[in-house]
Amino acid sequence: MVNAALEMCTCLNIVFAVAVPPIVKVNIYPSNSADVKVSWGPIIAADVDYYIVYLNETNNSTAVKSYNLTSAITTQEFKDLVPGRSYQASITAYSGTGSQPSAIVTARTLPPKVNVTIGINSTTVMNVSWAPIIAVDVDYYIVYLKETNNPTAVKSYDLTSTITSQVFIDLVPGRSYQASVTAHSGTGSQPSNNATARTLPPKVTVNITIHSNIISPVLTVSWVAPTSDVDKYTVYLNETETNYNTSFVNYPNVSSFATSFSNLSQGMNYSASVIAYSGNNSQESDIVSNRTYPAPVREFKCFQNSFENIYCNWSLPIGVFTDIFLWVFNDSASVQNISIFNDKGSSISTSPDKQPMRKVLSSTTTNKTFTTIEQLKPNTRYTVSIAVIAGSLQSPIKNSTAYTDVTAPPAIPESVKVDSVPNTVTSNSLTLSFSCSWFATTNGDLKYFTVIVKESAETTTDKPENISPLSKYSEYKSGSTKVYQVDDRVYPAECKSLSAIVPVKVGTGATNGGFVDGALMPNTKYRFSFRAYTYIPGTRSVRAGKQALFADTFFSLPIFTLVGPTDSGAVAGGVIGGLLGGVALAAGGFFLYKKRNQLQKESKSNR
Image 1 (tube, rainbow, N blue to C red):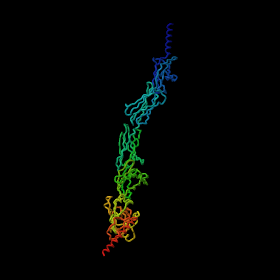
Image 2: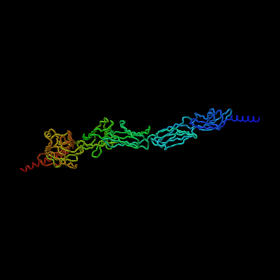
Image 3: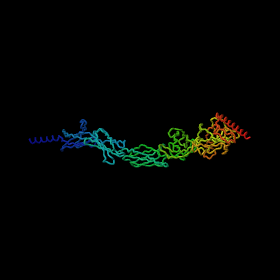
């Protein structure tokens, strides 16, 4: 009985042990950012009917996921979890009516693999930004930027989970960089994919140099860039006036370069720019401009036009120009500056002090090939210089020389008094005093002079009639005129000195060019005027005018010739008309009376 009882008791103990499951050892580990895997197994061999596996958020025990699993299953994967979040797992083993919970284990899902983008808007700056796709639990981020072709050149920043962008500065223009972001959650980390981008290429500094080759203009475009990674440069050269892209050239990756363009238009304004390319990025330089030198005018010549004008013409220059400029010089002194604008505007002639003198309308932009230069001095040599202007550039200068025509000498003032030389008056001739200071050579060299004789007792202030020639001596002798001119004479050589006084005899009987210096009438009142010529038609002269150019003095007061052709005495000078004429007549009558009485007495004594 006792043995039976003991045996029964032993059996009961065995049944009780089987009913209580063993303690289960549990492991948990993340398989990715949204999944964890839970595995378990009994510490000792035991019979287990089934397991229940539990998973809940560490900080939220009500958020529970659980699975009933047969005893043959020892792993369970939980999906669609929050990346980077902390989770708790436990296992309860069931055997019959008994159960045994495991210890609680904790783990975090891996942090997310964020999407990284790079923003480019500068040559030396990149903006790296990132964002997870869904809500996540991340402790911090580490953002990395390295050169694509130099992995050791790395810049990195540790950032809190609230920051989702980082600016990198002091980068190399045009260089390729790779950016990545590693998210950290607890001891887990997840790197992003690499994002690759290049900074903008540099904005190069461009310069245009014009070479002073007038016949075949040459223009050099040069540029300088900082240290950079540039795949190629494109150089553009454009005609500004026509907005026509005349030429462009692609250049390989260089940091500084210069290239020359030839066969360009003369006087044309060109603009140049350089575009740098780095991958799909490009950066254009500022546009700079400059002109080629304008071509000079062709076949420039100036001619005499009048006594105060000269006329200049030329052929238009090749190429483009803004205006044509002329300088007018008398010897070395500037007289006028003339600008002829190539814009249907006015041509303005100015004096050297820049005061406007006149305006000449230019009818078109292309056919203004002449100008008349006015307000000049007669009989003066002028040099005219002409240059073509394009912007601020000037063509080589061409010169031409021309003389203004001569004109009549300046008018003689009334203060000039013509008179006879004392003691030279006879009955048929007399000698006049000619002052070299009376006639000026301002308007032309004085070539010839003559004497105009007027039989008159008047004392009025008058000059000879302004015609040439006047009547001849033969017409005076025939009684058809009271005014005639004597022969034309070469201007006195003594007048090289303006202070010289030259005696001029009238009534010599000389003949020249059909004019006769005939004898004066005895006992007759004459008035005299000097006429000086700068030009007489038919004389040896380059001038081809039909009218003589001359100036006259005012007529003298009346001068008497002596009474008869046998009288050998001479009066002391000219006898003045008017009131003085009456005195002269009385004195003459008294002289003749005494002379007659004297002759009568001599006749009586001879008897």
